[in-house]
Amino acid sequence: MPKSRLQPGDIVGFYKGGHVAVYVGNGNVIHASRPGRPVAKVKLSTMPFYKAVRPVV
Image (tube, one colour):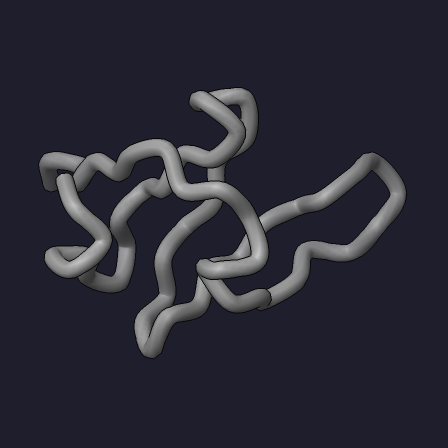
């Protein structure tokens, strides 16, 4: 799915799928960058976008 169709709750892959985050809206994702660091909200543009999927609920 392209970035232009993202909705809050979508799972976003970065670094060719080696890292994932949850899209929270307004161009932001939440992710855990490394062990021992708190989960953080960052701009989607801070990492190389790979692809996104929308979970089925």
